[in-house]
Length: 368
Ligand code: SAH
Ligand code: SF4
Image: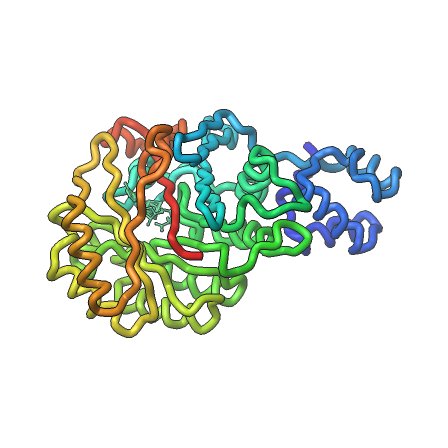
C-alpha cells in the first residue's frame, strides 16, 4: 500500500520528505502541484527532479475519493456523491451565488450525535473521514468545476456542514482546514472557512487554539429542556457552557460573531415566546442567526414551520437588532437541499430501522 499524500498537511509532508532526505522546499512544490494545480501524476510535476519523481511513484500516490455521481440542479447547485470505501458514501454540494461559490463538505460517514431532526444522525455513525477524504472533496470539486489556478476562485468559501460532526473528527478536520488555509494549497482566508458544530464545548476551545476559523453553532432551541430533546449532546454541554464557549471562541476567531443555526420546526421551537427566550439566552454573545426551514425526510417526526411563522420569528430577532437570515432551499430538484441528500451508507448501528431511507443533509450558509 502506498502512502496517500492527500492525507498530509504541509507539516506532515515536510516531515515525510525529510525522512527521505529531501529538503522542505520540495514538500512545498509537491503541495502546490497537488492542491493548487490539482495534479495527481508525479511525472507531470516538471520542476521536480526525475529521481525524486520516480521515488514518489513507488512510495506514494495522490488518491482522492472517487466521484460516483455528479448532478447539476436548475439553479446551478451541484451535488457530488463520493465513494469512501467499505460501503460508505458521502456527499458534497457546491452552491454558486453572484459573489461567491460555497462548497459544503462532509467530515464523517454518518454521525453519532443523533439529533432528533437530522437524517444523518438517524443513520448512525459509520466512521470518521480521513484527511484525504475531507480535502479530497475540495480537490475533486475544484477539478470538476474546471477551476483555473491562474483565474478567479470558483470555490471561494468552504463550510463543514455536510455529513457528520467536524469536531468529533478533530485531528483530521484540523489538518484538512490547514490545507484549505495554506497558500500553497487552497489559500482561503479564515473568514471564508466555517466549521459548524452541535456544541462540543471542550473541542471548540481546541479549535480556537489550533485553527481558528469562522464558527457556526447549531442551537435549535432556546432552553435546556428543549435542546436536551433535539440535540442530545446538550445533556453533556448545556447552554450556559455553550454560550461561554462561544465567547471564549470569539476572542480568537477571525470574525467578531458566531452564526447560530436554528432549524425551524413547526410547533416545536418556532413561537414568538421562544424567539424572545432565544434573545435572552444569546444576549451576551455577539452573534447572527441563520434560520433553516426544516427539510423533512421519511420517518421524521417534524414538520417545517410555515413561511409566515418563520418571517415573524425572524422579525422578532431583527427588531432586537440581531442580524437574521433565512436559508433558502437550493438544489431540491436534485435532492441537494438540506436534509435531502442520500448517501448510500451502510448502517452499522441499525438506527435506520427506525428511519428506513438514508438521507444526509447539507445546505448553504449566508455568511461571507
Ligand atoms: N454536525 C454539525 C454539522 C453538520 S449538520 C452540526 O450539527 O452543526 C449541518 C446543519 O444542518 C446543522 O445546523 C443541522 O442542525 C442542520 N440540519 C440537520 N438536519 C436538518 C434538516 N432535516 N433540515 C434542516 N436542517 C437540518
Ligand atoms: Fe450530527 Fe449535526 Fe446531524 Fe446532529 S445535526 S446528528 S451533530 S450531523
